[in-house]
Image (cartoon, rainbow, N blue to C red; front, top):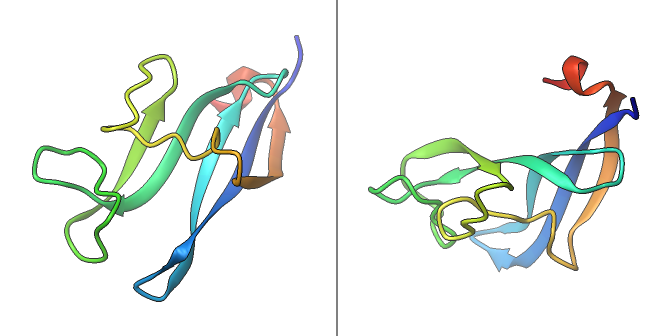
Length: 96
């Protein structure tokens, strides 16, 4: 079985509240297809990711790429300006 990867990623944003980048973790399969992504940030009262907040209730939002709902679950890894570096390479069971 081919190894999967965990990457730390960075998405450049205009300097928003003094924050020039958004960082995230992503789990990909051996071909680089994203499976899950973890983003930290503020959430709206309904639990969706608040893309514009610099204050508010903070949480870690897990994106399951099988659900594909970028309003509620951000998909920064797929954005063309995102960059990432390999953090871990292991079997899918080890990563899980």
